[in-house]
Image (cartoon, one colour):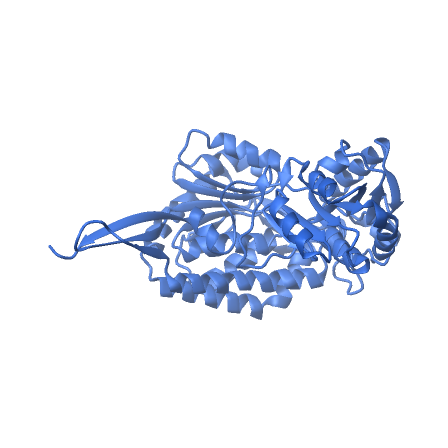
Length: 482
């Protein structure tokens, strides 16, 4: 079993207390261990970040860009090692892990380019001989909390823009999947990131939560995870001047209209629903089909789902990986039991997959449910697993109504050959991300990303929109006639 250290103040450190990391394909023995930091270690990380910010904010944007570019190169050079660890600790297929590793490098490259460009606006001034402009500045020390489902790409999505703009970070990776985040930190460290600019806190959340969230030097928190935890953080920040960027839950819908290319729609929905075993915030979990094509589309969809191959992520033949942990597996199975109790019909799947060696892993069969009532839990609540629920509707208006009848508003898709329907859907869907004839998943690094309603906060991630979170705006007026 490998023993890893964590990054704090530019040094790789350990504490003598450890957290074991397990492979969800076979949970019998740990594959690695990382330091279990204590509250005092977290406070020390903030001390380092405060000093690191004082240096990094004054570092040339071109030097910041160089560090990010070199880190991207190192990640690509180490792709086999990194992708293998993503698969080992998370369970996703090696193809998915390789794609995640490449995308993490893309985030670094994109924000390196943005750092070189600069950002601000020249403004007219009513006063003669005055020239006025705005400039964006870093805000300070930001706490980054990332989830287990995308353990490399989410840290990249969050850390790359805040580092490019001159901030410092304390980074808490998910307890279940710390190896990926440590790979990302090592690439930045080896690329020459100054000491203290990035500090990685590996530890048990219950033991360090107070030190992590209540440090007075925090000026922003960016969090991806459940609504329950996100709302708890938001309440904790209620009387503090701390920015909160939250990417929370989703109950994403794909709409199939009667004029859609049904085979193409079925393939796209399966890709969006069952990639990473459905453990993506943008995964399609509801399908709304116009009644005239419901029976045919359902037949195509089930046939497509039944081509999936369940197995360990390291097996090239696998197209559906295990869930990330025994707890997540058991949660999904409980949701399936409740769905059947509430009247749903299982068209395929519906139970754990424990054939052969899979008995030691966290496998659930890819599942399609029909006869799902709109008030049922499986239709309204996030399952975060390989489960897809179907409903038939009478027309376009009913389809949009069904999409919007949700507490969430992250992503939605429509499949149609009609341009008018496509544009109407884009206008009327209450979601931050809308797709036409493509998956609800797969938003690239330069595309603003985030949801409406309970799916997130007003601060978007990705693209230039993220600058609203990671920078502050200063207005400067110069009297050049004085």
